[in-house]
View (cartoon, rainbow, N blue to C red):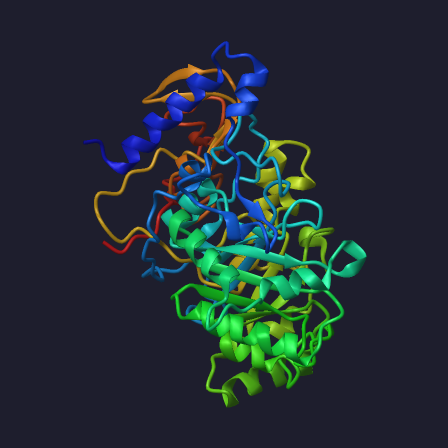
Length: 459
């Protein structure tokens, strides 16, 4: 029986062969499995035994354990304090291929070492409000020890939201919440870790707020994680607090974490952390939201409010739409440059984040984590997408592709090279892949012996 990794490679090769065959386009489109999404009423009818796409939406990779490296890259960063949430939209709500596609242009998330939870963002009034993550995303995240969270988006009325959908969502049937039962079934069947609840529809009342709180309590009994978004208050109205306050504490109290809206202040975060402690909770269960959808690393952020110099972190951090690095790029090479700057900083070296720029990179504040805690450890530096597809050094297809299920654990430090004088330059190369779509490429003529640090391990 093949190992899981061999199985993934073989099944990907088979999928690519099938997609590249001479099957008519209409037949191929009809056979294409898609990621799942529902409205509160339609999820009640979901049954994995009758959903033809359900078996293609199951993750095959368990959540890896990960640890702080014995030799962290950056002395300025703090281990075991702030966590990082990433709210990422990979594709439209509908028509999102479950198993990758024949297109290299994809947000191939690969700085997992700085992320603790990945929220599969999306949802729209016309398509669906409850989104289950692609199994490809869950596979890659779990391989790196990152939890994956499905998304519930109950939109503002300006974006088509209907208060009846919220009532349908929290409808009781005796001592049960039928929608919650289905959401638990979906998460367990597909293999992801919890749900992000974003209720922004106006028109609620105190009873609806209490029902939502009870819904969270009910779902938490399943063992799934629940993250609450700071919008609905205890009165049922939508009023973004940008902090933990008396008006949203009832939801935070029952959830694992809360994502605080973007317009926070230094004092508001300090008060939030203090209130969390009074409640017997860690302040790092609060994520200070940073909206980077429009500006990425050009976004103005009050970093000192979250990460005061010389003091413990105040709260955790939540990035809304860090896939800006992909959306704004001119192509794959530019995407990787932008992604490196976003996570590591303008110097491109997690051990050296000294800069006068406001955006110093996440590596300046948060210590990287490694999932490499057992042997054997194997990597072919495959990023999960490419211009061509290779197996054991032989190119099997010249067709561009993406499938994050095949992504290897990538280097912990990108890039950390020590030596005197001119040094070598490591990179990921799409032109000469070994297994999948990429390989490690090191170029240059160093003037001294170079130490290229790649992987943190705890073996």
